[in-house]
Amino acid sequence: MNSDIVLKTIYEENNTNAPELAKAMGIGRAQPLYDIEKGKVKHLSFDYAEKIEAVYPQYFLPWLVTGMGTKYKQSSEIVSEDNLNLNISMNEKDKMISILLEKIEKLESENAELCRKLGVEESAGA
Image 1: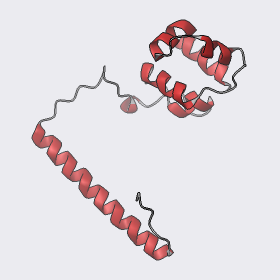
Image 2: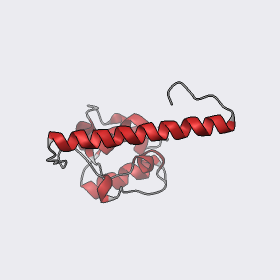
Image 3: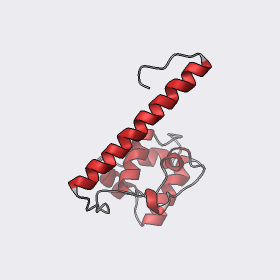
Image 4: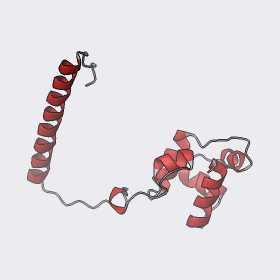
């Protein structure tokens, strides 16, 4: 699916148009969207796809960029400031952080062991 069809799908499903979407994306002018619609620009940039995802979080980012694969995120993956309502005490947050840090440490240890077995050096970011 081409990016022009991706945009048209977004317009239809969300009852919007290029000027409204451009405004919601914070890009000011709709001309870049018109250029995609007319085929002057073949692909939606990753930056624009991220901006669309911020406006319409139900769309899966890879689909926005490529027009292929899964169009919608699973409902558990849709998170935005508007619909995120977590009431977690500081104690629960500290527990979560502790658990995540333990998992990270375990993964780093497993990564180091795999690198040792494969005879490769770990990257600085790993």
